[in-house]
Image 1: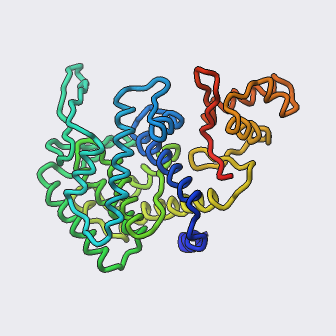
Image 2: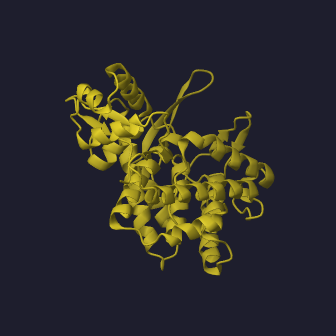
Length: 353
């Protein structure tokens, strides 16, 4: 099914009820922040992310920086959403730098070990363009250079000026605009850290600004994302300034990936609000599929009675206690549920019913 058809399906179910809008928004808050940060190495689980962002609570193990990064990520999402509503104002570099400052919170020192064992350090600047070169080692072992610190300000000026002009012309669709902005931005890599997270925030800024649903790049599909960028780099070439001015025709591989991603995410939103069945439960953008219908029944019972006991579950399901314990253990391992120290269950999976 093509992107245009899926988008028309999305429009056909508008307007959503307040409950549907609220549940979609809540789901996006958890899934976007969890996945965008997980891609970059954040160690918080899906359940920890939900508890932190929706209830302001901390549980389990985790680095303090990961908790702080996750909270800052949600603040940056809220800022992006608020800015996207203001459709009369053009995009500015100041907004991008401010978004970056909110995301990173403050300057910090990064420590690294060189191949010869010598320790080195450098300062990561929040809200400021890079002062030192940056690059990445591809999975093929090559070093891929981004724009130099010296050329970054001019390239960012070109990027923002191009975007505002392209938006006015209307020759590119919102999806094409978002994909091309993402690619050009990544080739500049204007900051010393947080570039991937800013790129994904800006994609949603552009989509939301044009009335499209916001999307999540799933960490479980990170390799597809990276490979689409790599394949496009091979077509565009290694010169950063050329990549920063790539055309829509040149980024065919990334655009194909991106359109498929947007289609999948919109279809997921459609299914989430329209498939109203008590046996359908969602976790991180996917319907939970199991061989046993008892999984959905357990989730319902735990949601309705968080203090339910194994004995009560066994009696209600009509199966032996060993089978119940195995099902519950598997659901805990999958992240669908967790148990508080007081013995109460917390259901992390979501149902629209």
